[in-house]
Image 1 (cartoon, rainbow, N blue to C red):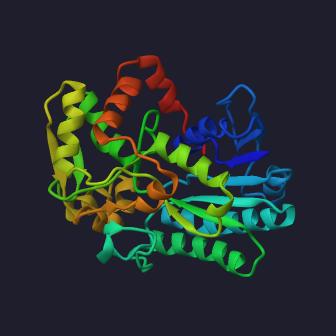
Image 2 (cartoon, rainbow, N blue to C red):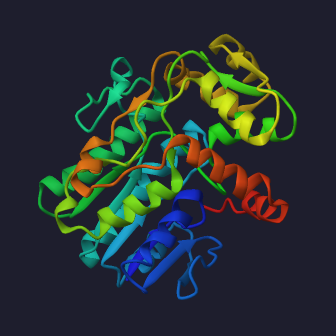
Length: 323
C-alpha cells in the first residue's frame, strides 16, 4: 500500500495518477477524499488527530506527505510541527518510508539564482523557519537510523487544475482569462522558475519507488532558463488570445493591500523571492533519472487547454481544493 496524506490538492492528484505505474494499492487520505484512479482506497481523516494519522499510515510501505495548509504563518506555526511529529512517529511505528513534498522557503535569499540541493539553509522569513524545522525533524530521525525518508522539493508550481493552489494561476492566468490585468508581485524583469505539477507528480512517484533515492533531498524536475515575469504574462496572454495587460506590485503596495486582504499580508515577508532572479536547478534529478521536464510553452498550452477551454472542467478544478 502507498498512501498520500493530503490527497485533494494539485500535487496529491498528480501523484495519485503517477503512482498507478507502480502499484494498484493506493490509499488517498484527506477530510473528504475523492478517487483519482478507479482502484483507489479512500480514507477520511483529520490529520490533526494523532490516532487518525497512525490509522492512515498503518499497512503502508510508503507515505507521501503532500498536505497544503492555509497560507497563514500562525496556522503553520501551530500545526505543521505537530503534524510532522505525528507522521514521523506513525512511520517509525509501522516501518513506513516517508516522502515529504517540500518548497524552497528555507534557502538563503542570497542564493536563489541557481538553487540546488546544496544551497545554504538560512531562512529569510518566518514561514521559511518553519519549513527548515520540518526538514530538521525528518533528518534528525534519518541520521539516527530510525526513519527512512526523502525530501522532494519543488519551486513554485503551476499546472492544469491547480487554480486554487498556484500563485501564478491566481495572479496571472485567471485575471488574463477574464480580460483583466495580470498582477505580478515584484519586478517583471527578473526570472522566475515554476515546476509543472504533472512533472512533480511523476517525479515524486518515481522517487518513492526508487530504493537508492531515500535519505537525501531531490529537486523535482523544472525546466531550466525560466522566463521573466513579463515573458510569463506575454506567453499566457498569447495562448489565451488576450492583450498582455499587467500591473507590477511593489512590496510597499503589497503591504498596503495586506490591510484589506489577509493573503497579501502573508506575502509581504516573501517578496524577496520576486525582486531577484529565482532559478531552480533540478539537474541532479534529471541526470540520475534521465528525465526531461515539460518545456514552459508546452505546459502553458496544456494548462490553457485543460482549464480555460473547458468550462465544466474548470469549475470542477476550482472546487477541488481539499488538502
